Length: 233
View 1 (tube, rainbow, N blue to C red):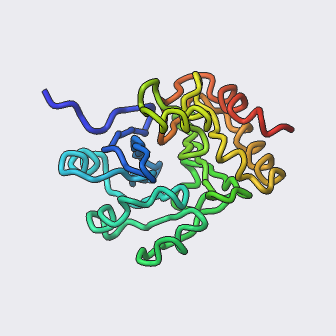
View 2: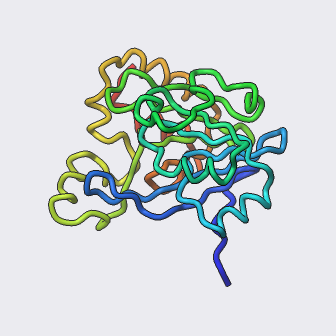
View 3: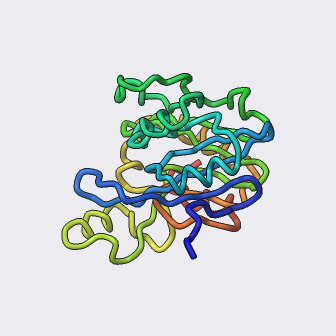
C-alpha cells in the first residue's frame, strides 16, 4: 500500500516531506504544509518538489489559492507550483523579489495577515537578520507555529566528515531543535528580533513545525522560548 504524501498534523493542516535539496554542499530535507482556510481554499507553505501523487492529494483537499515563500531561501520549487496552479497567488517574504527577479510575486508578506487568511492564520516577520527575513505563521485551528529556517535540528549521522563538524559547531545537531549559530550571529537588530519573538510567544502554541527538523507536538510555546533563550529579554 502506497504511503500518502500528505500526513495530517492537526485540524485542517497537513505536512508533506519532499526530496532533499543541496545547499552549498549540505543536504537539507524539505517539508511543506498545506492549510485549508476557513473559506475552503488551500495555502501551500514552503512548497517542496511537486509530484503527480502529491498534486492529486492536494487537489482532493480543495482549490489552491495561495503559495507562500516564508523566507528568501525557500524558493526552489515555486516555478513548478505556479505552473501547476496558475490562479494561485504567490506571497513572498521580504527579500525574495530581489533574488528571484524571474518570479511574479503577487504580494510581499509582513507583520499582518492578508485578508485571504486573516481568520485562519496570524503571522509576524522576524526582521533584523542579515541572512534572511523569515515570516513565522500561527495556524489557529491546530495551534501550530510554522518556522522555516530559524529553528533547525538534524538527526545524528545526517552529516559526515567535515560537514558533521560544521553542523555541530552551528548547533544544527543539538539534542533539541534550536536556532543555528549562524542565524544568531546574523541578527544585527536584536530589538526587532525580540519584538517579533514577543508576538510569537503570545500565541497559544501547542505544536511547532520546522522545515528542517522533527515537528514538536506539545508544549510549543515553552519549546519556542527555550529555542530563543539566547536572545535575552
